[in-house]
Image 1: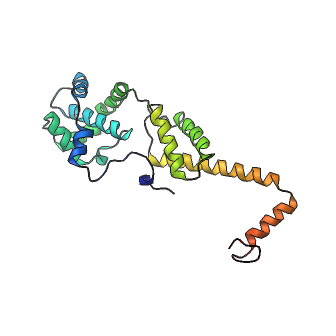
Image 2: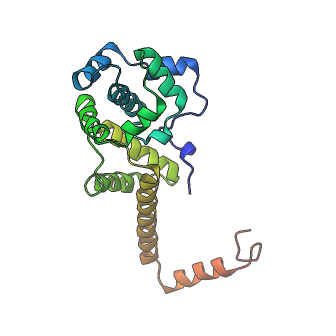
Image 3: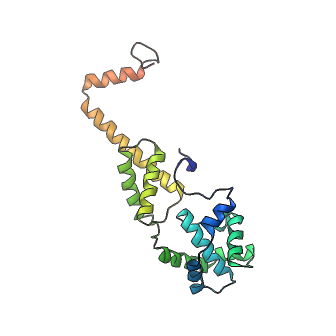
Length: 207
């Protein structure tokens, strides 16, 4: 298994600096105008759509309310002068309005949703191609992330990417193994078997 931090999969850092908050999570005038087209100012919906927008820009995917550090919410609230409480924002995240905003934000950023029936097949194809030249699972995952971003797709959960890429690597390696075996005659296969069965450091071993 590979850990998420060993890959290029975007994550929210636990120790977000003041500089990063300002650079990454400050809504622009255009973004505030977008939010005002769909929500009334000083409402939970207005704060919520902006929070969702900034998180998607940073991570390439939507997340739950529990996954968003309070420092990000606080920063955005200060920038838009919102008095919405955390409880009100949490209620927004469990509402139908939040889901409607997801569709609006996708349209605004021109990002395509990740479809587990269709997009996962694209990812599988990219992973199979990458596995032909890369052995490390993290490298294969990084290739699929790069392609998803290039094609303007949302990112799926990390476990989904890991599952697809791991399966692709196994499939490619098995294909290479079968090809290699097809080149060996009975004598060659017997020799390989003896090498694998020999104790390490023995006359026929690799030690």
